[in-house]
Length: 185
Image 1 (spheres, helix red, strand yellow):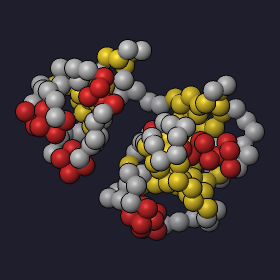
Image 2: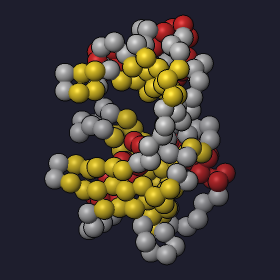
Image 3: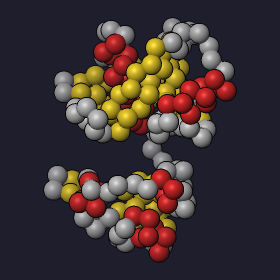
Image 4: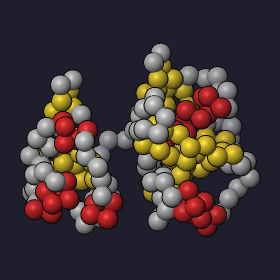
């Protein structure tokens, strides 16, 4: 097995969102994958191997605490490794996952990913959201995770998450966004 650490969503080393990518040649047990994720101590470790039918790749993600059903930055990191370290020549990678098939296309200046959309329901903004984020969200929505719309893009770009505090909020994940100078931050 080869392992890579990739900083997703950036072209600057030690920036962006890091993920471990493990190229699996021999099957691993769930316990082995969990122990590797614990050892890596990153938000996600991706385990990828060629699909048995030769069509695409099987992809799974583990946090130090458990397996998760979807992870965008670790998928992007995995595509980067397959395109650049495995010399994958096609323009589209198909990943078979618990969340269905995911597609990553190599385009002129990077990659495009296609992911399932989750329905969002507006929820009340709470004091706990404000306490954890350090700013009162203008709006909040619940889907698979909690999405908070913040009053200014600087709150998104300057935010330094406190993992322990984020666990207090509802949802599998916490996302933040705000209107920015070029759309949404």
